[in-house]
Amino acid sequence: MDTIAKKYKNALSGSKKIIGINGSPRKNGNSDILLKQILKGAKETNVSAKRIYLRDFQFQSCAGCEKCRKDKICTGLNDGMTLLYPKIIESQGLVIISPTHNYNVTALIKAFIDRLYCFYNFTKDRPGPWSSNLAGQGRKAVLIAVCEQKSKKDMGFTLDAMRLPIKALGFDIIAELPVLKVFNRGKIRENKEILAKALNLGKNLAALLNK
Ligand SMILES: Cc1cc2nc3c(=O)[nH]c(=O)nc-3n(C[C@H](O)[C@H](O)[C@H](O)COP(=O)(O)O)c2cc1C
Image 1 (spheres, rainbow, N blue to C red):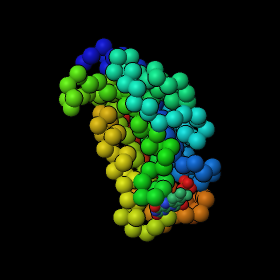
Image 2: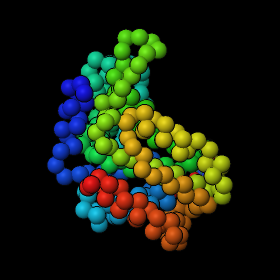
Image 3: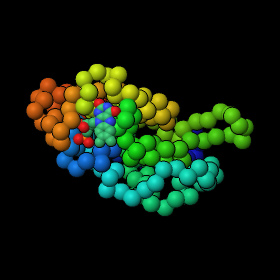
Image 4: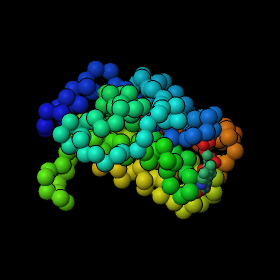
């Protein structure tokens, strides 16, 4: 394991933490309620959890400057993501929730995931092998997608767009929850079954981290 990866692994020693990333631009919407519920489950299982509303952070998508190849963290941009990197590194659990916007994750989640590019190591060969400085450290993730339509196909790429990169970064995705048929702000409150599932997701993630 290279030095940076070792440093990130060491940042996980001590009590387990979960970071919950919310990609909805809508305040008090369905993602907000679901994320609160998941993290409530985690806290009930004695893992500390922090909610991040990406809409409250000023940040842009990756500029492709490639400075991270040398610096091993994003140094090309100094913005809201600069505040989030340490929290990501020190959290063994990651929860990401995105509403479906046009068959995909929201622009906030896309920009967030693109900014995780700085966690990769590349060789000089193009195309060439790569590795992630977050891999092999027992990091675990839960992915949730929320949409209006009733069929999973109307979610389009929402779950795929989170799963592929988060897996590539070295997270073990322990669960995915597609939440269908919810449009109005806060409507998910009426769906007790989904709320119970969300609570359990948080409990399960916390229990696995504590193993
Ligand atoms: C710009 C935009 C695009 C959307 N695109 C889709 C879509 O492609 N498929 C779908 O089922 N719902 C779509 N929706 C509906 C949202 O996914 C739905 O209202 C969801 O509950 C919003 O979650 P939130 O309250 O956490 O923001 C869209 C909503 C907006 C604002």
